[in-house]
Amino acid sequence: MAKRERTAAGQKDETLLDLSHLRRETRTALELAVVALAPSELIDRLAKSAGLLEAIAELPTDSAPVVALVPGLMTSARSALDDWHTWYRRYLEKKIARG
Image (tube, rainbow, N blue to C red; front, side):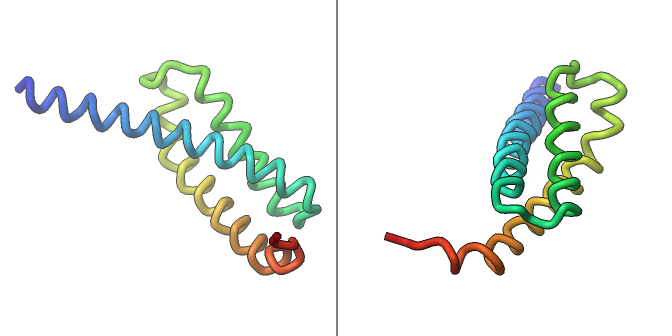
């Protein structure tokens, strides 16, 4: 029983760490997208994800809003980040001088 509890706690910590990294990466992508004048739809998706990730970071991890929002939020945030990386590679990467 104790082993199962440790595993569950380890998975919870990993999820919290994943959320923290996702929050930071999404916020950074949003800032870069705004400066780069990315399409407004992409900026909106990044903003929505960043805002919700910031909001749930302030709530207890076992609260109903966090439990309800996290699975879909992680999926939509990762999708927005994937789209940001694709847009960046397609439109900006070649324009930025490497020195």
